[in-house]
Length: 247
Image 1 (cartoon, rainbow, N blue to C red):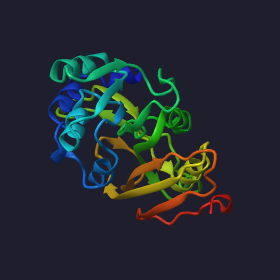
Image 2 (image 1 turned 135 degrees about the vertical axis):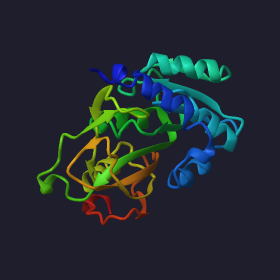
Image 3 (image 1 turned 30 degrees about the vertical axis):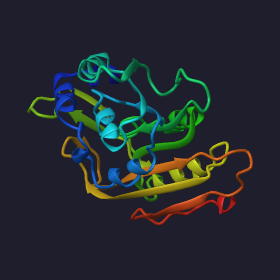
Image 4 (image 1 turned 60 degrees about the horizontal axis):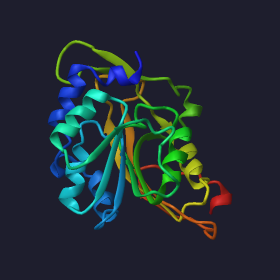
């Protein structure tokens, strides 16, 4: 089953119609960066917007934002349009974003990379259309490739029922690989900040680990003159091996 059909299943639509619409629904780590990157008139692209909850969350922090939500699930977008007619929602994925370079002050993308293994295709496109910030989340583990348990892993969609409706990837990435990849984006980032914590794996996931690090990553876009990246990732409970080229 493709991912758009998987996330169109009734329990997924029902879950996102009820949850993740209020600032109180945010995880503590999500509350760290989001208020800091919103400002009056900010142009925001929300990739994987589902039924539009983050529009409501963001405008509770800063009412005067120019928001566009994107998702691959048309039924979720219909819910979003009906609930938030004052926002703009469009059917598209993050691999070919239909906007010019530097269109948005903030590109926000949560939950998507937790179920999409092709982050090295998605992140450069998000970075391209941003002129200031990319804010995303990922699951990380140290030395994942060396552990011999690098996946693939899977997640069974059955949010509020007993029956399995669909299966999607459950993505965990190698922590060092991710950070060094981000530091190598072009143009070089001005700053990379992160926070997060270890969290028990969902019982709906099929994975040989009991915990993974849930990381929130804030990439501040650089320019052609940026020769060093401010690295502020000490709040993650992991030790990173940074390529000397980036230090």
